[in-house]
Image (cartoon, rainbow, N blue to C red; front, side):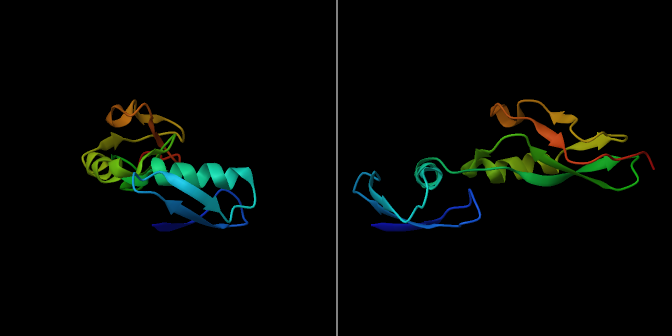
Length: 121
């Protein structure tokens, strides 16, 4: 099986081609112009991760929503669960950028943090 991945590590956006074996192992990897592309494509095939960026509700703020993000990438397969969990959250204004909203979010070892300051309304 052939799998194509566009590397997003640097501005070159290399088109990397993976040849995948019967046991889902990488047989060959071509198209990367640097070692970072090889590392990215391997990780993207074996254990893809994404940084979650979303919003949570705010009580008493100048805006009704606060942008938040995980401080490290989480497994791509956990994104739906993470979005459902953030939909249940509500924070009290004021909030400073970088404030940890949820420690050890979903027991993944990452924190959910505020992405901006939000004053009381």
